[in-house]
Amino acid sequence: MSIMRLSNGQNYLRHPSVEVRSGYPNITIPAGFVHGLPVGISFFGKAFSEPTLIKIAYAFEQATKIRRKPEFISSLDMSLKPTG
Image: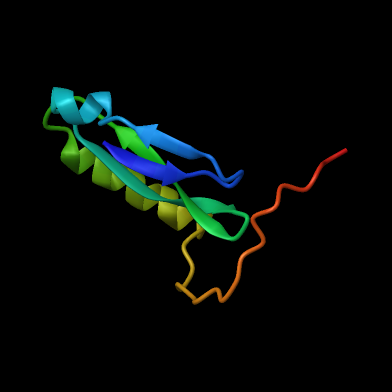
């Protein structure tokens, strides 16, 4: 289990995911940014489908060009701004 800190300041306890316990392969790659922080997308497959997952992940990265060079952020505004 791991603890994640959400942008609203609450803690979230994350249990090991089903795919980890079941043995199904997955790959997580960069998918964008929220409040300046990176988020990822995971692709899951059936047993022994790792080569296909790698091809899918590579194609996604090439099509979206989301990845960017890491940078140091000295401060981050974590306040939730109302929309609407």
